[in-house]
Length: 140
Image (cartoon, rainbow, N blue to C red; front, side, top):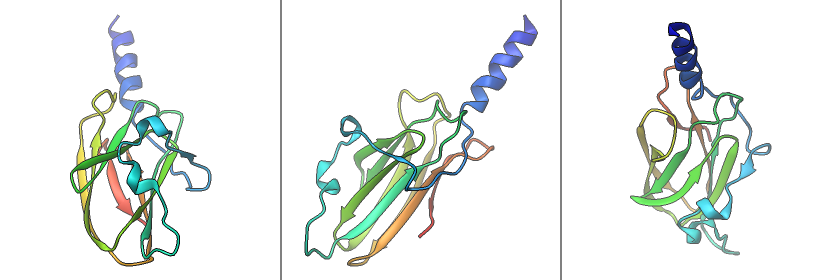
């Protein structure tokens, strides 16, 4: 019985490990997990910046779901192997990553401040390394 408990614990903890993905191979966040639709609309002939957030994938990353906040507004939720492309006016922003309420992974909060310039293109990766502390990492 002890052996089964150890196996269950190892399996539960490994449910939060991830492997890198690419923006091109990631699925788009479905509409039911987009909470601020205005960020997802690109305006033609605009000076808005394009910001892409993408989440790692992996057989063992299925238990983790993360909410992304933009200036304290819940904007969308990312599951494994998903990406969201948003469009922001030039300004200062705070991006906050939090574990979703119904997620199987440890509760985390990570944030980054960004000074967005017109027509910029930024990319952020959400990863969960083996220490189980999810990170929001700017890669471009």
